[in-house]
Image 1 (cartoon, rainbow, N blue to C red):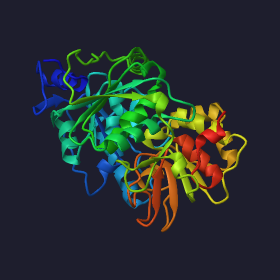
Image 2: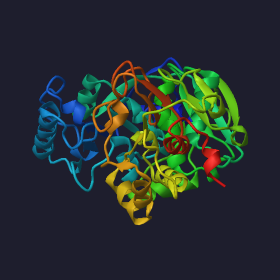
Image 3: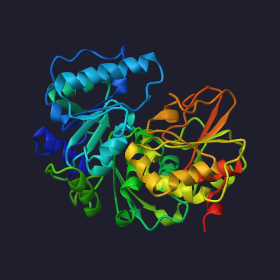
Image 4: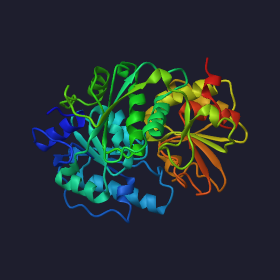
Length: 417
């Protein structure tokens, strides 16, 4: 019986020859990522030993630099943990800071064919590297850190084959919104991506897709390996690995083809992304107070580039706050070198340090009652970015940048040749 990519990864790391949907598997954890919320006083439990310090990554990202006493205390606890167990892969406030999932990509922590766990729900981001990556609760994280293993139930898999080329001003965020609107929830299912369009999709574009699969409620999201991805990982991590390709006779619950040429800019209406998107033309003119580009899904160099292209020679509306947050300080620095930061600030944007920031409503962009935001981040839930009476629309970075100029939701194609 043929297996999907995720089934082969789980089989490899559980010591089994074959796994199938419905099986419970205990797998060895290749990388365990702890972030600042894990060290919060209400969650943290003192760990007496770790299975392997070399397999642990510690990142401060949600409220960085610390915004209050609770977050400062959590980060202090994390620093003490790092010193106690001599954790080398540590990303404190400073040059190496950033959002955990983006740092995993920056530093090649997610090895193809391996298992990666983190306490944050968007851990599926690392699946772009042919890795079984999943968010887990705090007890499971502590178990993985101390025992070096965890367990999963194997779910069925849906395969998406991408073909064609993305039109100008259209990004993988729009492709995600198309999938979420067309097919809805993928709860208890795995998602596998591949297809003839893969060579034309950057790692950043692919990672936007796997990151956003958390909003489909998918268990795992993986890309089948290709040379672009393999070279990317090898440039960042010398550790050997065994990538896993789906078998030719792999069994999928469904197999769907997405023609990228046919995708248009989409906007998700407030409160959910599932079956809740419209073409941008149908919501043009909706007044906004804030526009945000950032998060683990869309704080990439590609996103800075398209935002700078649209904002170049334009000004942010006087009625709008445009907040832009890079995924890591590495991205910030490269965007600075390329002139994107200058263009964005001259247009009227505020560029923050690398952090989760406004995405989770933690800091750096809270919405007041009655305000409306269009965001290129991960979620648009009620109250996600501030007051429950605020509204959060979701679009691509291009759509957000165009809307910031107009002061209302706008079509990014109007700003690109």
